[in-house]
Length: 525
Image 1 (cartoon, rainbow, N blue to C red):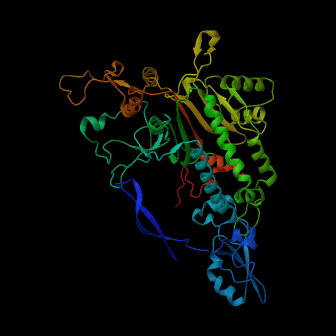
Image 2: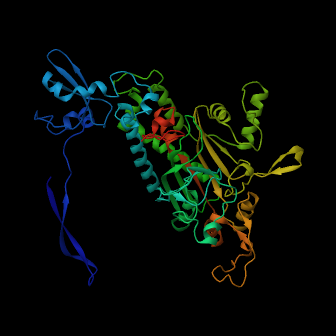
Image 3: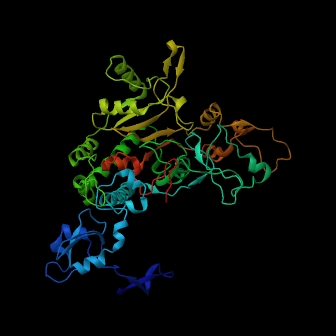
C-alpha cells in the first residue's frame, strides 16, 4: 500500500493565519481491485479490461458445475446478485471445492425461508439475502442525507433506560450474570417508583434500581430537541411482547425524529411523506433497486421461491408510494367507515370496530385498500384514552358518545398505514405544558402522593412549582423537568425501519429483512 504526504498549515496564534507547515501521512485507497458489480455493469471502464491486461477480483465460490474436461465456478463478492463465471480445470475445481461441500447446509436446491432462518449465520450468503443487506445500507445512507439536508442533528440515545415510554409494560429487564434471580422480561405497573434506590441507597443491582432495554427513544430525543431544535436517531428497540407473527420481532430498529416549534400535525405528516418518497426515488436509479425489481427470490442454488413477489408487482408498490399526497382521515371517520362497511355486508371483521378501541390489523388493511387504493393513508386524532400520556389534545371537537351524555376528547396524533403491512409510522404533538402533562400522568396512575416534606429534608428542597408538591413522579421526574424548566410546542414520530424495508423489498415476513432476527423463543446466534 502506497502512502502520500500532504503539506498542511497550522494556525499561527499571533496572526490567526495558517502559516506553520507540518506533514501528515494519509494512506491511499486500500485496494484498486474492481468489484464484480463494476465489471458486469461497466466492463470497458474497468482497469485492465479494455487493454486486455489481466484483472484480479476477490470473491467467494458460490457453486461449481463440473463437466468431463472443464468446470465452471460461480463467483460472488456481495456487490451484486449476478455471479461472475470462472472457467476451471478439473484439478482447480477439485482444489476449490473440497469434500466438505457434501455437508454444506446451502446445497444446490431450493431452500425455504423457514429452513434458512435456522442458519442465520449462513443465510446472508444467498444472493437475495445479501441484496437485503445492501438495501439496508443504501436506505440508511439515503435517510442520513435526507435529514442532513433539512438540518436535523443525528443523535445516539441510550438503549438502557429507567422507564417504559410506550406504557405497554412489556420490557426486558437488565440484570448481571451474578444475579441470583435473573428476570428476562416483566410488565411494569402503572406507577414505576424510583424510591427503592432513593430510600435505601441501592436495591443491590448494578444500577441501584431496576433498568430496562428501551422500547422507544422518544423521551430522550425530546430532551435533545430542546437544545438543537431538530433531532433524529436510528436505534435498536426491544419489546418483550410474546407475538409470534410475521410483523413482530423482539429486537428491531426504529427511526425516530423530534421537531421543536411545531404545533400542527400536518408539518410532521408532510415530513414523513417526503422522507419515504425520497427513499423510494433513490431506489429507482440505484443498483440495489434495479436488482430488487429483477432478482429472483432464491436460495444459494438459484432456484426461485414460488411464493415470491414479481418485479412488476413490486414496481407498482413503489409507484403507489410516489403517488401523493397521501389520503388523510380522522379516527372517527375511519370507525364510521368500518362500521358502515360491516352494516352493508361489504366487509366482515373478527373484531367489530367501535369508538375508543384501537384499530386492529384487519381494520387497518381495509382502510389502506379502500381509502388508500394502493397508497399509504394517514389516520389522525385517536381517542386520548387509548393513547400515551405525553400526547397533546387535538383541536377537533370532542367526540360525543352515549347519546351525547359524555364527551370523549382526542389526541393530536397520527398513524401511517400501508397496504398489507398496516401501521408503519406513529407520531403526535407532545404536551409541552407542565400542568396539563401532570394531569395526564395522574389520570393514568403515573404519579402518587408522597409524605409531606419536613425541615430535615435539606437535600430535597421543595419544588418551586406548587403542582409538584407532595407528588412522587417516579422515573419520569426528569421528563417532567423538561416542562418545568420551560418548553416549546414540539412533536415527533417513530418509523418501524424493518417493516418499511420489508415493504420496499417485497418481503412479507419481517424475520427475512433482519440478518439475525430475535422473536419469542428464538435467539439462535
